Length: 360
Image (cartoon, rainbow, N blue to C red; front, top):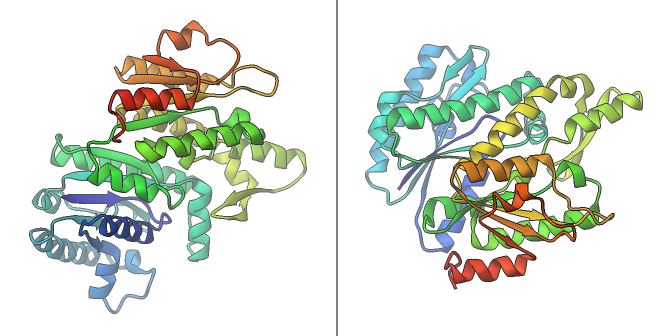
């Protein structure tokens, strides 16, 4: 099994993939990890850390080809190989590719995975590494370019090879990565639930989190909650009303400040990317599992976004399962798109076990 993993600077793919390898090892699978960036620095000993992209393009290309030649040679001797690279770079040279098609054909990957993360987390990591040249707009555009670049690379090499987009989120998603690669028999589920509308309702959020954790125990889950940034524009408007020129958010376990104008600049990007990305995650899943809790006033906590996701999954011929925990009855726009409705998570789990979607 050869897996090519892409993702822009600021995701910290190396430590994440090292955890994936440890999970695999604990389950009796040997995985060899090739970190292209580290390998390039090892060969170009005269280049200072963080400066590899500043060298002339001709040398950069030659160095990259030399490294991939070594990786291709290693691939023949490994049961499982993960290649940690990039699809694109956005640097002083502008936007340019990070791989060569002829070598990727020789490598013959079995799967491509593009890791992504929230713009606040990307900004936080890059600030710690003293990469301050990229504005939030640069980061969010680069993230989109990396997804599209990876998908085009995958389909250009072999249309039969699967391509997945996976949110890095917390370290827990390393388990999702492992399941996606090595437990292909598991059902892949997109988790759908209200987010922005319940952002300040702790009891409801707790119910949703319990649902998410339960589903992740048994399925390979694509969880939109692993990349949550739709709240940033709301925080930006609130900061402006209070006369502040920054937005404070929680990221990677700490409070960070983002420039107010930069957050305002990416509002449209956040909205459009969320819309397109969630549909893409549904398309790469086998089914959608939606959880609808009750709001404090008794109404169902269902948003227009959740309804649109259910409709998209239905039209894509996916299995559509709705856990309607709310007291209010569902509308026909839910009942007509759902494969089956449940009153609780427990009822849903009994059904999935009866369908043998869950291994006993």
